[in-house]
Image (cartoon, rainbow, N blue to C red; front, side):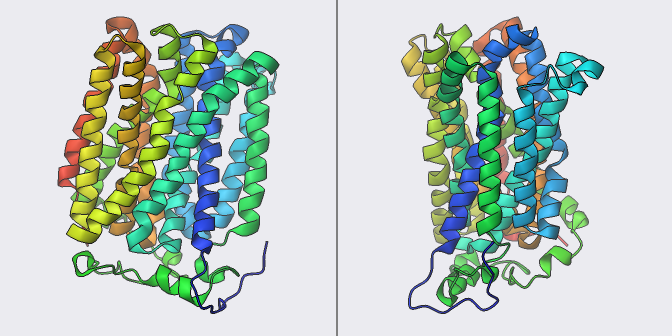
Length: 450
């Protein structure tokens, strides 16, 4: 790792190290979702190879989400306590090893004790445990490395890696599956994760003032938290996040519980998580089983929602920052969050009713894109509410998303079997629309109640 400098060198123009940190976060985001989505594509060959039914594969999907949900808050707390460099590197190594183990889930010792299905459920649960640390620590890193006026964009870009990873995974895994067998996808993504973990550990630091590449001009930009009079922070928001004492302060659990915006934010993100996991778990199989596409063609079109996420997630982060600059934090976050989720629900409902497949795929893809248009507003709101404990609070919020995500992979095929895919997807759209309306109650600019 490069030697950190306690006194960043001054320069005539601001350095741009924070954008390189953001690029690394985006790279981690990409591999996170490659490792998450690969099983939904490989599942077509895994099910007959391992003797699994569609419902059993749904249990495997849910096991990942359960581990991911349970360890959101611990993962965020670890980042607040020990720093993002160490925690993120360790987390990526952890889940990459278990991703590779997915390929041999039928032969590891756990298969003798739990059976093949139990072994696969355990491995996917442990992958979820590792990946739980990712997004809360992204939020912690953005809180340290970006000023208020760039935080929505920072989270939008980094989480936009979700779209890239999820978009490249279906065609890539389908190609590897056809040519080298389904196991090859898990070996390759596990190796890629180990390489990315090493790169992050080598280059990143917890705070900008520790990094050799940050000069005084960039540090001044990062620390210039107040943006406009309309963005005057509540007590505590303007404090310097780089003094090294925020991680040592007790987590304000009581203030979290007393703040209505925290509750509405968590419930709304639960709705987002339900809809998101429909796309991540079942969209490819929906195209193959319901719309009649073959393996490779279905994989190609299954990238559509994730390409829309890639484009609209950073755009939403930029828009929420711009609206916040003009109308204040409360309007900047709530208007973007509400509009995005309502548009998402509308696109999904209309897309399920259209028989022409390519128009339907376009609308369903836009449904995913508008859903992720709101992500920058969600995550920036947790920094607005509690900048010193952004990792912990965002972990709480993302736990909600994964409660929804735990239900979605199992409930979606059940509804489809009982009532058809149109009803199943329309139910998800209604959940997303309710989450959008809850944004009208969220006021992150007011801060936490003491």
